[in-house]
Image 1 (tube, chains in turn purple, brown):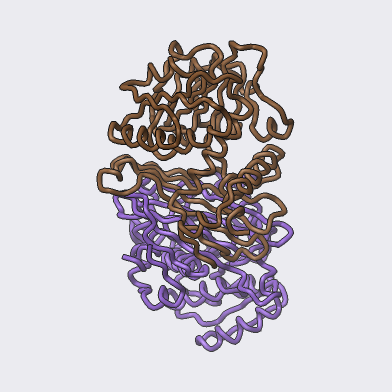
Image 2 (tube, rainbow over the protein chains, first blue to last red):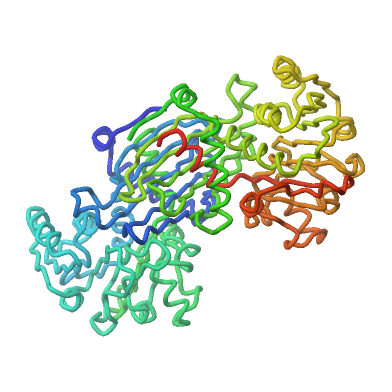
Length: 313
Length: 313
C-alpha cells in the first residue's frame, strides 16, 4: 500500500488527464456502468462539521476508491483548514489496499472545480458580462480559477459569509488577473452577473429569484448533503435547463431536491451530466437569450475514483 | 495521522477493554446514540469478492471511524488472505484524520468473534452437548476460540466448503484443546450439536430445518450483506428468541430478512442485542429445554468504531 502525501499528489497531478478521466467517469455513471453505493453522511452539529464517505467502482477497472472528506467550518478559528480528507484505493481483483492518498481534501476540491468547468463549458452564456461568486473559501476560488478557460470575462462580483476570507479572495483572485468587486450582501453579486457559482456550506437559500436576470447560468456546488441549500427553489423552477451530476442524489438533496419537494419541478426536467456530455455539444439554448440554466453538483463518487486513478495509475 | 500496522495493533490490543467497549457500543446503538449511516456494499462477481464500508460515530466521542473490509474468496488460490481491510479514525471535533489502522481485517475478525461470544453468553444452552461449526475459515476458528470462555464443551463438529481449510481447522483447533470431528456435509454437524455457529460467505441456505434439534442455539455471522444466506428460513421461523445486532440491517439482509421476506416471522419478534445486553441476564428461556434460539449478526459499524477506539485511545 503506497502512501502519497499532498505534495507528491500535486507533483504527479495532470489536469488534462484528470479532466478526461472525470468526463469519462460521468459518462460511465450515467450509463449505469459504475457501482456507487449511497453516500454516507455525518453531521456534527456542535462542532459545525460534516463528513461524507463516497465510494465508487467503474466496472472493468483495476481498482475501486473510497473517499472520506470533511468540512469543519469552525476550524479556521483554530488555524486549521476547513476542508480535509483522503482517498483510498483498493484492488477490485483481491480487495487489498493499493494506495492511500493523503490529499487533505485537495483532490475533492479539484474534482469539484473540474465538474464546474465541465458544466460551464456546455451551459455558460456565450457572452459573460460578469461572473458572480457566492462564497469566498477554497472551493469558490477554485471554481473561479477553472472558469478562466471557459470565458474571457474577468469581471467578478463576490460575497461570502466570512469577511476575512473575502479580503483573501480578492487578493488571490486579483493576482490571477480578475477584477474583483467584494460586496456586503449576495444581492449585488447576483444583479451584476450572468454566470454565477455558489460554493458555500449554507443551510438556507442565499440567492433570491428576483435578483437573477434572464439569461443567467448558475452552478451550485455547495449543497452536497441533506439540509444544505443555496438557491431559492423558485430559481430552479424558472430554469429552462437543469443539469445534475446525479439524478439519484440531486432528487434527494442538492438544490433540485428543494424544488422537487415544493412541487415546483418534475424529475423528468433533470438532465444527467454524463448523458449530456456523451451527446456532445452545448446543453443551453444559445438562441434563447432569456433562458436561465442551472447545474446542480452534489459530487459523485465516480469523480473521486477517477481523479485518484489519474494520480496513481 | 498515526499509522498502525497489524503487529502494533495486536501488541496494543486488550481483549477485556475491547469487549467492554463493544458491549457499551451495542447498548448505545440500540439507544439510538450512535450515528451509523447505511453500510456501503460492493459485490465483485467475476473476482468472487465483496467489500463493505461501515462508519460510525458514538455521540459524545472524540473520534469517528470508517472501516473498509473486503472478502475475496479466490485469494487463497494465489496465496493471499481472503479477508483484508483497514480502519480509519477521524476527529469528530475537526474532521482531521487521527489514525489509520492497517489491521488487514484482523479487527473485523475479532470484533465479530466478540459479538459471537456476547450472544453465546446470553443464548447458548446451559448444557452444550456438542458445538457445531459451519465454515472452516479464519472467522469460524475465531468464533470457536471465543466460545471457550462461554462453555466447557470441547466436542466440535465442523464442515466447510473448502476441504484444505478443513484440515487446517482441525489441526489448529485440536491444538487449542478441542476434539474436532470434520464432516463431509453440514447435516451431521447440525445433528450432533446444540450450539452452532455459521461463518461462511454462502449465498444459499446450508442448514436445513429438519437437522436442527429442539433446544439448539445458532449464531449466524456469515450473512453480512444482500444475497448472503446460511440458514433455511424455516429454522428462523421455529426460533422462540431471535436476537439481532441491528433490526435495521437484519430486516434488510442477514438470515432474518429471508424469513421476513417469506412472511414466516414478524419484525416485532426481533430483539436488538444492545437492548438485551442493557437489560442484563439471559435472553433464553432456560426452563424451556425445547426452545430454539437464533442470533443474527450482520456486523454493525459501532463494533468497528469501538474496537478501533480500544486500540488507539
